Length: 165
Image (cartoon, rainbow, N blue to C red; front, side, top):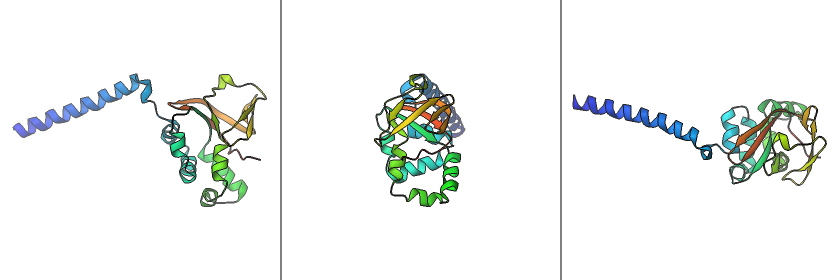
């Protein structure tokens, strides 16, 4: 009988602890996920996550930042693979993979309210992207969701992979 009571009390304690931990996390803005964890949790950036891993950029984008990331969805990568007539494995094996990914990252936290039509923004790769506001685009890629906040920056979801010229 004592074992059953102890087990029941232990189970209740664990449940209360797990629920209260979630409440504290919600109240603590510092508990917010970083850019990589935010993207992974969204479930639509698997190819991007694999590419970041392959290029050795995961730790960088989990770093202090702040960063602005134009994040292509899995659908955007699928379109690129079809357009280039290559496989995902071939994409991940490209020598310029890191440069392509860095072309999607801007130093600092740039929100949609900071953008101006026609502005040029220098990426971490050293090359510029052009912002358009009607419709909202980065180069020729549409921004399908803006201002996804993370603890170390912001993500803008785009519908095409940006390729540096």
